[in-house]
Image 1 (tube, rainbow, N blue to C red):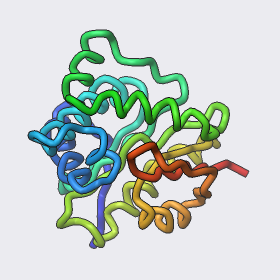
Image 2 (cartoon, one colour):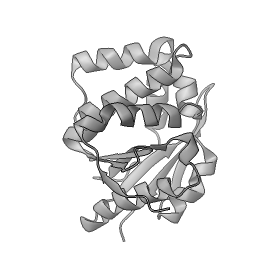
Image 3 (spheres, rainbow, N blue to C red):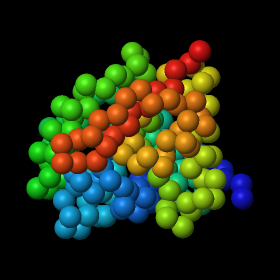
Image 4 (cartoon, rainbow, N blue to C red):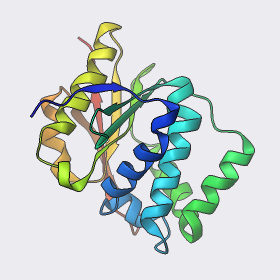
Amino acid sequence: MQNSVRPLSIDDLDRAAEVLGEAFADYPWTNWCVAEDSHVERVAALQRIYLEHMALPFGRSYIDDSGNGVIAILPPDTPEPDGETVEKIVELYGDRFERVLQADEQLSALPVPEHAWSLATIGTTPRSRGTGLGTALLKHALAELDRTEQDCWLDTSTERNLPLYQRFGFTVAGKISLTDGPTVWRMHRIQS
């Protein structure tokens, strides 16, 4: 199966958010820090905000032609969203927003390479898993970073993701078991 990847556009935002909502429906991180009621809808809305307010204007984001997979990478100098957007984000996390703050504090102990981009999000629809779509998305986004010799880092709370990222040159730089939450692995991909 050939997966053609192209830049995400503003017209793709609704579909991209839907894909990421489905992709993260069973993800340990979002299950822990996003409220249970209307969970998938909340996750999709959060992803849409991040894509619209951070990835599209400041980073690089891609979707495949079939609209079943999305990836976004952000530069290290991506600005924080404005106050109104932050209010929406807090509302969407719901009664679990304190967990996000707690996690941010704990995760700050893990190293981030200087001037490195972050792999902010990647996801495919459940029916697209195992088709090579995730690999195609990663290959495309990382090729962009390779052209400009940019380092990259990511966090994952699913151990089964580690081998995929390792195939692309990421190595585990640290791991933290969040208080009453999931384990998070931080991975780095350093240009040699």
